[in-house]
Amino acid sequence: MLMIRLQRVGRKNDPSFRMVVTDSKNSTKSGKFLEVVGSYDARLGKNKTILKAERIKHWISVGAQLTDTVKNLLISKKIIEGKKTDYRPKPKPVENPEPVEAVEEVKEEVKEGEPVAEPVAETV
Image 1 (cartoon, rainbow, N blue to C red):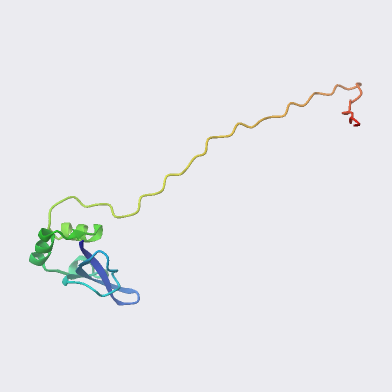
Image 2: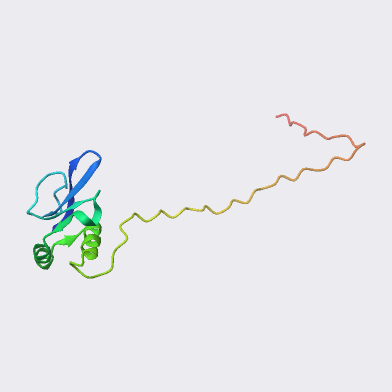
């Protein structure tokens, strides 16, 4: 399956990305891709985004899937229409174990003046 995804390039602490068409089985760091269809500089934001709109539409028509980040970027640049997706991971639900009922030991009240009876050990 073909994917349009971002491939990080650039130096340490200076992120910039290529938008590439690649097979979904290839990792982003492998360098194996079919075509570069744009670039995105994360530090400069929207001012430094270069996209080949016709080629992107061609690959989408062929059946290439978009990652969530790429989809949101293309929607904000008005290359495709649609609703942006929330790409952040969903918080895991907190498991609330059922409260365990505390078993209170009933202690016999000892009245003053009465001798305390101790349990007698049985001999076998």
